[in-house]
Amino acid sequence: MTKSTRSAPTRRLGTSGPAVGPIGLGCMGMTWAYGTDTGSDDSSLVIGHALDLGVNLIDTADMYGPFTNEEVVGRALLGRRDEAVLATKGGNVVRAPVDGVPQLPSQDGRPEHLRGAVDDSLSRLGVDHVDLYYLHRPDPAVPVEESIGAMAEMVTAGKALALGVSEFTVEQLDRAQAVHPIAAVQSELSLWTRDHLESVLPWCRRHGAAFVAFSPLGRGFLTGSLREAAFSADDYRSANPRFQPENIRQNLAIVDVVEAVAARHLATAGQVALAWVLAQGDHVIAIPGTRRRTRLSENAAAAGLQLTAADLAELDALPQAAGGRY
Image (cartoon, rainbow, N blue to C red; front, side, top):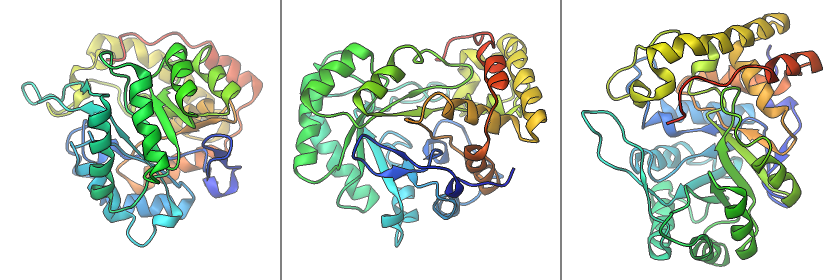
Protein backbone atom coordinates (compact mmCIF):
# COMPACT_ATOMS: atom_id res chain seq x y z
CA MET A 1 0.00 0.00 0.00
CA THR A 2 1.34 3.43 -0.91
CA LYS A 3 -1.66 5.74 -0.58
CA SER A 4 -1.31 8.62 1.89
CA THR A 5 -3.97 10.62 3.68
CA ARG A 6 -3.79 13.23 0.89
CA SER A 7 -5.82 10.83 -1.29
CA ALA A 8 -8.36 10.08 1.46
CA PRO A 9 -11.42 12.19 2.31
CA THR A 10 -10.85 14.53 5.24
CA ARG A 11 -12.86 14.47 8.43
CA ARG A 12 -13.88 17.38 10.68
CA LEU A 13 -13.29 18.37 14.27
CA GLY A 14 -16.86 19.32 15.12
CA THR A 15 -19.61 20.43 12.77
CA SER A 16 -17.83 23.61 11.71
CA GLY A 17 -14.29 22.78 12.75
CA PRO A 18 -11.20 22.38 10.58
CA ALA A 19 -10.77 19.53 8.13
CA VAL A 20 -8.14 16.99 9.12
CA GLY A 21 -6.76 13.83 7.62
CA PRO A 22 -8.37 10.65 9.00
CA ILE A 23 -4.96 9.74 10.42
CA GLY A 24 -3.32 12.25 12.75
CA LEU A 25 -0.08 12.15 14.73
CA GLY A 26 0.02 11.54 18.45
CA CYS A 27 3.28 13.02 19.75
CA MET A 28 3.33 11.66 23.31
CA GLY A 29 5.86 8.91 22.70
CA MET A 30 8.43 11.36 21.35
CA THR A 31 9.28 12.47 24.88
CA TRP A 32 7.36 10.37 27.38
CA ALA A 33 6.15 6.93 28.48
CA TYR A 34 7.81 4.57 25.98
CA GLY A 35 11.43 4.80 27.03
CA THR A 36 14.46 5.58 24.91
CA ASP A 37 14.53 4.38 21.31
CA THR A 38 17.97 4.63 19.73
CA GLY A 39 16.44 4.05 16.29
CA SER A 40 14.15 7.08 16.47
CA ASP A 41 14.24 9.81 13.85
CA ASP A 42 14.53 13.43 14.93
CA SER A 43 11.07 14.47 16.13
CA SER A 44 11.05 17.62 13.98
CA LEU A 45 11.65 15.48 10.90
CA VAL A 46 8.82 13.15 11.86
CA ILE A 47 6.38 16.03 12.39
CA GLY A 48 7.48 17.70 9.17
CA HIS A 49 7.02 14.42 7.30
CA ALA A 50 3.51 14.17 8.75
CA LEU A 51 2.58 17.55 7.32
CA ASP A 52 4.08 16.57 3.95
CA LEU A 53 1.77 13.53 3.91
CA GLY A 54 -1.33 15.50 4.88
CA VAL A 55 -1.28 14.15 8.44
CA ASN A 56 -2.17 17.58 9.77
CA LEU A 57 -3.75 16.90 13.18
CA ILE A 58 -0.82 17.18 15.57
CA ASP A 59 -1.68 16.11 19.11
CA THR A 60 0.34 16.93 22.23
CA ALA A 61 -0.24 17.76 25.91
CA ASP A 62 1.43 19.67 28.71
CA MET A 63 1.99 16.52 30.78
CA TYR A 64 4.01 14.72 28.10
CA GLY A 65 7.58 15.01 29.24
CA PRO A 66 6.29 16.73 31.33
CA PHE A 67 6.22 19.98 29.32
CA THR A 68 8.99 19.06 26.87
CA ASN A 69 6.65 17.58 24.27
CA GLU A 70 4.98 20.90 23.56
CA GLU A 71 8.40 22.48 23.11
CA VAL A 72 9.36 19.78 20.60
CA VAL A 73 6.13 20.28 18.67
CA GLY A 74 6.48 24.05 18.73
CA ARG A 75 9.97 23.92 17.26
CA ALA A 76 8.85 21.48 14.57
CA LEU A 77 6.01 23.78 13.49
CA LEU A 78 8.16 26.87 13.05
CA GLY A 79 7.33 28.25 9.62
CA ARG A 80 4.60 25.62 9.11
CA ARG A 81 2.04 26.51 11.77
CA ASP A 82 -0.67 27.22 9.19
CA GLU A 83 -0.35 23.67 7.81
CA ALA A 84 -1.16 22.05 11.14
CA VAL A 85 -4.32 21.62 13.17
CA LEU A 86 -2.74 21.85 16.59
CA ALA A 87 -4.27 20.21 19.65
CA THR A 88 -3.01 20.18 23.21
CA LYS A 89 -4.42 19.23 26.59
CA GLY A 90 -4.37 20.40 30.19
CA GLY A 91 -5.66 19.12 33.49
CA ASN A 92 -3.34 16.16 34.10
CA VAL A 93 -0.44 16.44 36.52
CA VAL A 94 2.54 14.11 36.22
CA ARG A 95 3.59 12.10 39.27
CA ALA A 96 7.17 11.11 39.94
CA PRO A 97 8.30 7.73 38.54
CA VAL A 98 8.52 4.78 40.90
CA ASP A 99 11.72 2.76 40.46
CA GLY A 100 12.12 4.47 37.10
CA VAL A 101 8.68 3.42 35.83
CA PRO A 102 6.33 6.24 34.70
CA GLN A 103 3.16 6.53 36.79
CA LEU A 104 -0.35 7.47 35.73
CA PRO A 105 -1.06 11.17 36.38
CA SER A 106 -3.39 12.82 38.83
CA GLN A 107 -6.04 15.32 37.73
CA ASP A 108 -6.41 19.06 38.32
CA GLY A 109 -9.46 20.52 36.62
CA ARG A 110 -9.73 23.62 38.80
CA PRO A 111 -10.43 26.74 36.73
CA GLU A 112 -7.37 28.52 38.14
CA HIS A 113 -5.13 25.62 37.12
CA LEU A 114 -6.54 25.44 33.60
CA ARG A 115 -6.25 29.20 33.04
CA GLY A 116 -2.57 29.02 33.85
CA ALA A 117 -2.07 25.77 31.97
CA VAL A 118 -3.28 27.10 28.63
CA ASP A 119 -1.05 30.17 28.86
CA ASP A 120 1.94 27.98 29.67
CA SER A 121 1.11 25.65 26.77
CA LEU A 122 0.88 28.52 24.30
CA SER A 123 4.24 29.80 25.51
CA ARG A 124 5.94 26.41 25.10
CA LEU A 125 4.37 25.88 21.68
CA GLY A 126 5.32 29.38 20.57
CA VAL A 127 1.83 30.17 19.26
CA ASP A 128 -0.94 32.59 20.15
CA HIS A 129 -3.68 29.97 19.94
CA VAL A 130 -4.33 26.26 19.51
CA ASP A 131 -7.00 24.88 17.24
CA LEU A 132 -8.27 22.47 19.89
CA TYR A 133 -7.80 22.47 23.66
CA TYR A 134 -8.78 19.38 25.64
CA LEU A 135 -9.48 18.71 29.27
CA HIS A 136 -7.11 15.77 29.54
CA ARG A 137 -9.22 13.90 32.09
CA PRO A 138 -12.21 14.83 34.26
CA ASP A 139 -11.18 15.76 37.78
CA PRO A 140 -13.34 13.83 40.26
CA ALA A 141 -12.95 16.67 42.77
CA VAL A 142 -14.14 19.44 40.41
CA PRO A 143 -17.56 19.65 38.74
CA VAL A 144 -17.31 19.23 34.97
CA GLU A 145 -19.19 22.49 34.53
CA GLU A 146 -16.49 24.46 36.34
CA SER A 147 -13.67 23.02 34.25
CA ILE A 148 -15.48 23.51 30.94
CA GLY A 149 -16.57 26.99 31.96
CA ALA A 150 -12.95 28.01 32.43
CA MET A 151 -12.09 26.49 29.06
CA ALA A 152 -14.93 28.39 27.40
CA GLU A 153 -13.14 31.56 28.52
CA MET A 154 -10.17 30.42 26.42
CA VAL A 155 -12.35 30.38 23.31
CA THR A 156 -13.71 33.85 24.09
CA ALA A 157 -10.15 35.11 24.53
CA GLY A 158 -9.01 33.53 21.25
CA LYS A 159 -6.54 31.18 22.93
CA ALA A 160 -8.37 28.09 21.66
CA LEU A 161 -10.62 27.83 18.62
CA ALA A 162 -12.51 24.78 19.87
CA LEU A 163 -12.79 22.59 22.95
CA GLY A 164 -12.43 18.88 23.48
CA VAL A 165 -12.44 16.42 26.36
CA SER A 166 -10.72 13.10 26.91
CA GLU A 167 -11.98 9.90 28.54
CA PHE A 168 -15.40 11.31 29.43
CA THR A 169 -18.52 9.25 30.06
CA VAL A 170 -21.75 10.06 28.23
CA GLU A 171 -23.14 11.62 31.40
CA GLN A 172 -20.07 13.86 31.70
CA LEU A 173 -20.29 14.72 28.01
CA ASP A 174 -23.90 15.85 28.39
CA ARG A 175 -22.88 18.13 31.25
CA ALA A 176 -19.92 19.53 29.32
CA GLN A 177 -21.99 20.12 26.18
CA ALA A 178 -24.51 22.11 28.20
CA VAL A 179 -21.73 24.61 29.01
CA HIS A 180 -19.93 24.83 25.66
CA PRO A 181 -20.02 22.84 22.38
CA ILE A 182 -17.58 19.93 22.44
CA ALA A 183 -15.82 19.56 19.10
CA ALA A 184 -13.87 16.39 19.85
CA VAL A 185 -13.82 13.55 22.34
CA GLN A 186 -10.52 11.74 22.69
CA SER A 187 -10.54 8.22 24.11
CA GLU A 188 -8.82 4.93 23.54
CA LEU A 189 -10.19 2.83 20.69
CA SER A 190 -8.59 -0.15 19.01
CA LEU A 191 -9.17 -3.80 18.22
CA TRP A 192 -8.30 -4.61 21.82
CA THR A 193 -10.11 -1.67 23.46
CA ARG A 194 -13.67 -1.33 22.24
CA ASP A 195 -15.37 0.05 25.35
CA HIS A 196 -16.82 3.17 23.71
CA LEU A 197 -18.39 1.71 20.57
CA GLU A 198 -21.92 1.56 21.98
CA SER A 199 -21.85 4.74 24.05
CA VAL A 200 -19.40 7.55 23.33
CA LEU A 201 -19.15 7.06 19.55
CA PRO A 202 -22.94 7.39 19.09
CA TRP A 203 -22.92 10.44 21.37
CA CYS A 204 -20.30 12.06 19.17
CA ARG A 205 -22.30 11.38 16.01
CA ARG A 206 -25.48 12.83 17.55
CA HIS A 207 -23.70 16.00 18.63
CA GLY A 208 -21.52 16.55 15.58
CA ALA A 209 -18.31 15.89 17.52
CA ALA A 210 -15.28 14.02 16.27
CA PHE A 211 -14.14 10.91 18.10
CA VAL A 212 -10.34 11.00 18.26
CA ALA A 213 -8.93 7.54 18.92
CA PHE A 214 -5.70 7.38 20.87
CA SER A 215 -3.61 4.19 21.07
CA PRO A 216 -5.35 2.79 17.94
CA LEU A 217 -2.45 0.36 17.55
CA GLY A 218 -2.73 -0.98 21.09
CA ARG A 219 0.46 0.80 22.18
CA GLY A 220 2.27 -0.95 19.35
CA PHE A 221 1.01 -4.44 20.09
CA LEU A 222 -1.39 -4.65 17.15
CA THR A 223 1.45 -4.10 14.66
CA GLY A 224 2.65 -7.62 15.42
CA SER A 225 6.12 -6.39 16.34
CA LEU A 226 5.80 -7.05 20.10
CA ARG A 227 5.64 -10.78 20.71
CA GLU A 228 7.35 -10.91 24.08
CA ALA A 229 7.67 -8.74 27.17
CA ALA A 230 11.00 -7.00 26.60
CA PHE A 231 10.70 -3.40 27.77
CA SER A 232 13.14 -1.07 29.46
CA ALA A 233 12.35 0.07 33.00
CA ASP A 234 11.44 3.57 31.78
CA ASP A 235 8.86 2.16 29.33
CA TYR A 236 5.55 2.17 31.15
CA ARG A 237 4.44 -0.94 29.26
CA SER A 238 6.82 -2.88 31.49
CA ALA A 239 4.19 -2.56 34.23
CA ASN A 240 1.07 -2.48 32.02
CA PRO A 241 -1.20 -5.50 32.61
CA ARG A 242 -1.69 -6.33 28.93
CA PHE A 243 2.04 -6.54 28.35
CA GLN A 244 2.78 -9.03 31.10
CA PRO A 245 4.09 -12.35 29.71
CA GLU A 246 0.97 -14.48 30.24
CA ASN A 247 -1.34 -11.81 28.83
CA ILE A 248 0.92 -11.22 25.84
CA ARG A 249 0.72 -14.93 25.02
CA GLN A 250 -3.08 -14.78 25.09
CA ASN A 251 -3.30 -11.51 23.19
CA LEU A 252 -1.19 -12.81 20.33
CA ALA A 253 -4.33 -14.63 19.18
CA ILE A 254 -5.73 -11.18 18.33
CA VAL A 255 -2.63 -10.25 16.35
CA ASP A 256 -2.72 -13.54 14.43
CA VAL A 257 -6.15 -12.70 13.02
CA VAL A 258 -5.14 -9.13 12.20
CA GLU A 259 -2.10 -10.41 10.33
CA ALA A 260 -4.23 -12.89 8.38
CA VAL A 261 -6.54 -10.08 7.23
CA ALA A 262 -3.52 -7.96 6.35
CA ALA A 263 -2.06 -10.72 4.18
CA ARG A 264 -5.23 -10.75 2.06
CA HIS A 265 -4.79 -7.03 1.36
CA LEU A 266 -1.00 -7.00 0.97
CA ALA A 267 -1.03 -4.61 3.92
CA THR A 268 0.55 -4.59 7.35
CA ALA A 269 -1.15 -5.59 10.59
CA GLY A 270 -0.89 -1.99 11.78
CA GLN A 271 -2.67 -0.73 8.68
CA VAL A 272 -5.52 -3.17 9.22
CA ALA A 273 -5.83 -2.12 12.86
CA LEU A 274 -6.03 1.54 11.83
CA ALA A 275 -8.46 0.85 8.99
CA TRP A 276 -10.76 -0.94 11.44
CA VAL A 277 -10.77 2.14 13.70
CA LEU A 278 -11.60 4.45 10.78
CA ALA A 279 -14.39 2.09 9.68
CA GLN A 280 -16.26 2.76 12.94
CA GLY A 281 -17.61 6.02 11.54
CA ASP A 282 -16.75 8.95 9.33
CA HIS A 283 -16.48 11.07 12.48
CA VAL A 284 -13.64 8.91 13.81
CA ILE A 285 -10.00 10.08 13.55
CA ALA A 286 -7.04 7.96 14.63
CA ILE A 287 -3.88 9.46 16.13
CA PRO A 288 -1.23 6.73 16.25
CA GLY A 289 2.12 7.83 17.61
CA THR A 290 5.51 7.04 16.13
CA ARG A 291 9.12 8.15 16.26
CA ARG A 292 10.00 6.95 12.76
CA ARG A 293 9.17 8.44 9.37
CA THR A 294 8.88 5.01 7.76
CA ARG A 295 6.26 3.96 10.28
CA LEU A 296 4.47 7.28 9.82
CA SER A 297 4.22 6.66 6.08
CA GLU A 298 2.84 3.20 6.78
CA ASN A 299 0.26 4.56 9.20
CA ALA A 300 -0.82 7.32 6.81
CA ALA A 301 -1.37 4.80 4.03
CA ALA A 302 -3.93 2.98 6.20
CA ALA A 303 -6.43 5.73 5.33
CA GLY A 304 -6.63 4.22 1.84
CA LEU A 305 -7.26 0.64 2.99
CA GLN A 306 -10.87 -0.44 2.50
CA LEU A 307 -11.79 -3.45 4.59
CA THR A 308 -14.57 -5.69 3.29
CA ALA A 309 -17.69 -6.58 5.22
CA ALA A 310 -16.20 -10.03 5.76
CA ASP A 311 -12.98 -8.50 7.08
CA LEU A 312 -14.87 -6.32 9.51
CA ALA A 313 -17.02 -9.20 10.72
CA GLU A 314 -13.91 -11.29 11.36
CA LEU A 315 -12.23 -8.45 13.25
CA ASP A 316 -15.38 -7.58 15.21
CA ALA A 317 -15.49 -11.17 16.46
CA LEU A 318 -12.04 -10.99 18.05
CA PRO A 319 -11.92 -11.81 21.77
CA GLN A 320 -11.41 -9.18 24.41
CA ALA A 321 -7.84 -8.47 25.38
CA ALA A 322 -6.38 -10.22 28.41
CA GLY A 323 -5.40 -7.72 31.07
CA GLY A 324 -6.67 -4.29 32.04
CA ARG A 325 -5.87 -1.11 30.12
CA TYR A 326 -3.87 0.33 32.99
